[in-house]
Length: 347
Image 1 (tube, rainbow, N blue to C red):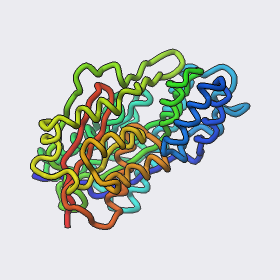
Image 2: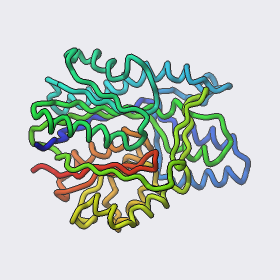
Image 3: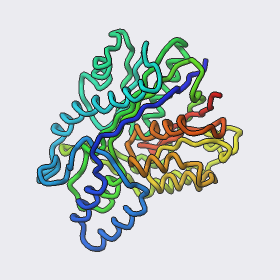
Image 4: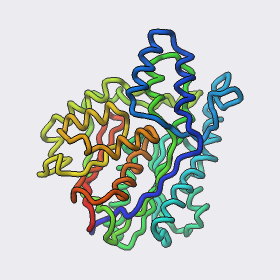
């Protein structure tokens, strides 16, 4: 039994906060670190990032004066995460019939609420009370792969299943009061976004093939989320791209990802975790510059939306003219771990 990804709906909030963040960060830095920050920001490949918070660092904004505590941030998450997820689901419903959902799989790592986002979404959509729900939390950027993998397992065990997959992240709720240039560069990457997809056993769209997973040894400290009294603190080590490149130099790992195929004969849906990460994947696998064009476009227009990012890339793949028949979905996150799926376009 094969599972198929038929369509992806996406949504971002209305507030573009990227320029405001750059100005806010600049004001916190002395001359030398400011020059470094500005140089790295210019090279980031990011032009826009979107937030549920209007002008969060401006006078009267959410982060004006003393930084808000985790409780205040989670109150906004409980309100805005379901709202953004429902906008993505509405966009999906404009593409394909979403009636008859039997399973709901939701991934999110930027907030906690109970009853969960999955239950809030199910109630808002009027789904059957018998719908089976799965909530994937705190796995970070590769959670989209885990969500799709879960949907694949469901369809393979229940061929009539119609699985709604949702990823929703409000990364901008976790801005931190710091003048550390490394921390500011990490925060520079992240924005808010949501995506929704339909996975069934009916042929169409992109077939979800064999999953793969690998953890890079001695790398657990490189990507971390720490829950504090002032939100979730992200640590993104500058060594991550080099460690990814090193891991992808391992022929055994590459074989587990591409099988017998030549990497540049495939289409690539790679999580847009940052320009340096995309560069590392491209160079390590010897891919042509156009191979990661969809990932770079998502990074430019939306930034890194954690688990939702890969879904935005897949949405572009589904909307693009036909290319290579076989492909790969690949994402990285805490661990340092790589997760992915083999993909196949359906004629």
